[in-house]
Image 1 (cartoon, rainbow, N blue to C red):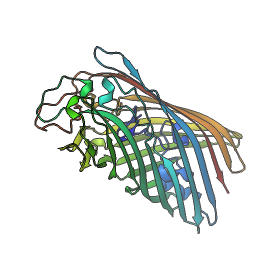
Image 2: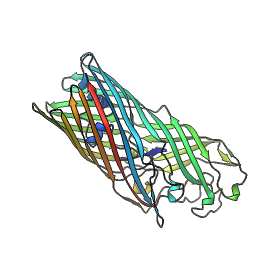
Image 3: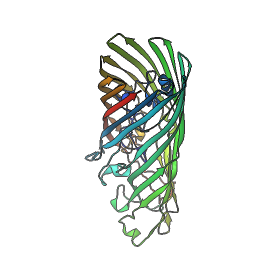
Image 4: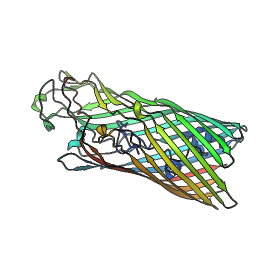
Length: 438
């Protein structure tokens, strides 16, 4: 699935992300159906799936409340050529969604809510080859706040839209090279290790979405939603630790301001849901596709502002990403027998990251998505559990393109690439879900 951010995890981040930095699911209902919940979105969490689905709550004074809480566990491994294997030592992060919707008149529904983006976190040892890409993003989190509205155009046609703001809390550590000027330093010489710790809070990163649902037949619904891109960029703090080399003895570090910038992509989701109902049994099955335009995420930039070691100023740094469009297809649904609900889904997503730029900052690869869940539904309540697994294919990077950051060097010097090796990862999400209509 894409997994995390760090930086940035950001867009990088942590480990296995869905087609890039995040998984292609939003909330536990979507997770248990492996992402196949677009045309069938009909609860308050439609705010983050297909806002047109909010209109299914239409009716003056009708209300829908939803909450879910989960845990995203991300296992990662990296083996550098001729070296041992590094494992993620901090694989878990909390996930939650809270949303509510209210019918105003017979056709209009307004809604609001907050959700976390499903991006994993990691912590590696501060030594080894992985230190040059990322050692820690455990404190990174992305939270999206949204307000929206939906309208019943005709009994068969529903439209919806949202305004969103993504609050990002970046907490990222890695090791750059302090090899100065045009001096030649041995590859991987720890005496020139330059530990960097970046923290950055971006409170205003606007975006939005629009969606539509159309009942082509009483048992068949078509749905689609378009998500706008989001730019993460604000001033944060970059703490620089001087290297052990005698070259830097007695040199003070001045300045702490830096700005990290990158894009989260626009996307297009579409689905077709088929329903069948009898007195005691109902079934819903949906086929869906999620196209994420990760080509906008071509690099992560870190721009120091007045940071220097002695008289040597840190230069801007760029992490090459060169991402491309990812496509996730899924088939999922649920079966209601009396008051018991069972849900399941299967999906597959292509990788947004080319093998040349995969690193411990973000491990991305083609992946299978599995979802399973169920619960109890009665008197307007739906209470249940859900689980999802994203299993990534192994990636071997034999033509590395991620260069070691060297902010004290002449930018015209030949880069040293640091992401060669073999990567593996999987994401496991488990959680509890509850909703109420009244």
